[in-house]
Length: 89
Image (cartoon, rainbow, N blue to C red):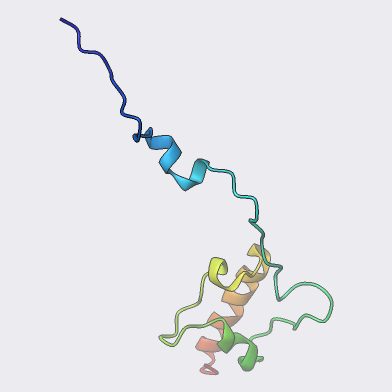
């Protein structure tokens, strides 16, 4: 005797439950605050700017939180590390 696969009316398959596979209409990405016209220059001497991208514990915030582009994130992390070495931060 073979068992039949009987689906209940309220059940869904696993793929439809995941939001990754669903189409999201209003998904948008923020622009990088450090690129474009009038953007501040990333420099290890600009402590006021660097403190914005460091947490209270002294860790560098990731770009998914700060919405900084990948290129600018590398420059930012390098300048934060330089400022730490020179005891500016």
